[in-house]
Length: 605
Image 1 (spheres, one colour):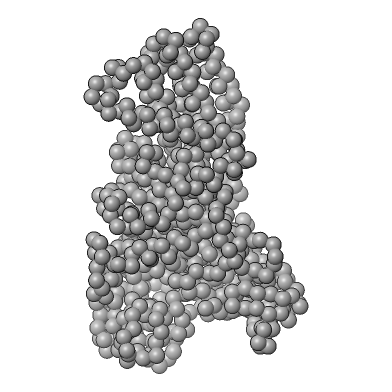
Image 2 (cartoon, one colour):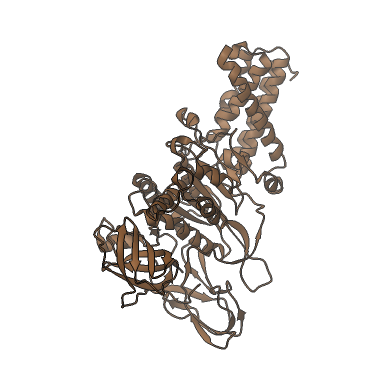
């Protein structure tokens, strides 16, 4: 279902559609509701609180209300809108901060003050603002859903394509000339296949629980470069891929997602704060408007949409917030953009489902979660992908949505239902480790428990764009780190000095990679982002260092002398070398390192 025009507020019917029967938290039972449809939006009580029909039984309807229901009493009116829960789509979305049902929080503050009032209906996008429209279609063009009618410079870095709604097909009979128009003014007229004429505006609506259509979904082949070494080099995610970041309290889920939002090479960022603490979302809301996009030099908010539904907001809207975010992401994907969606966290979303399921008196599943938990998670993550978007041209128009969901298992227990069901769906698993976080090793991603199923698909891109050595270097580094993990059990019993020199050198080589490559300082102005070529050069030098000291140890050089090499310190500082000048610095370091080890072994290494 889609519309060619959008209205500033939810359309209501002046006559009452039903009556409130009883109230249980966010769940309201309506009576005399015959003729209503599943998932239609209604307005409850004289305050017109927004709700959604989630169950029908004869003339009785169960309504999930997205606002606080304190003071709502039986006998109050229920009004019908005849629309499913939908989002407004059009110019003006970028840079906005919404709640879980696409109400703009700054605009609500202007109406109600610092605290969100109930029953406030504010347009998600400004209908009276004028946008500079440039037509791309011409009179006589045959068009169908997804075709570009024109374009609008939404921000300095995002060109917003005005698309034909997916249900429209016909011939353009009129197109507006270049100029400034509001979202309610017609910019095109189309003669449909049934002979009727339809006016189109720059705005449309789309129900959040239904994915927007596309022509074909492809296997992802390009990595989503994040600038985080352990992610890009060891456990890469593809553009159009899915990833999960599970971890207990304090392990760094939120800061990892912040880093991804700041530095990944997607053109559009959608950040969904789903049930997180208010202070964490406050950091996002304060920090993002001040951040500069490293690629454009413009504010990062010029390509970002924030959805904030904190833990003290109504629990029902939390359940809707992820659908709101993924629908906005699909809209920009259809324009041909690569979109990255961060959901922090899906555990809070699942908890909202559990609470509402309990109010509905449904049969509980494992740990009280509803039996449909797995299917809801799958529905959400499956809306990611690298696709050929809908349009009438023969040429392929690529767009992608990469979904990265944080999971907050209670007590860091990865065997709980949300984590396990998420792992069955996603293809990248970044396991956060509380022990690493306690040792101040960040990102605290456990390299032995994490994995990526996109590795084989990423090899052609890395070989062509960065280095053909990437697969071999990554594999050698993982073998060395696994060897270190095996030796740690012996070290804890007898100490490192009791090991043979060869195995002591194995520990030294692994320590260099662990401390100087896998660790990364998110707050350092250089180390916060590491380009792919720099990552490969760093790993190559570290593994060459390991090979050379292994050769030195085999020639009888003591481990103490090996650990006192002067080149060890500059190797440890490679991460903070300038991202513009690292190649010359690393080449010089590599040469000096080889000469120093050669001198140590008398020229034979």
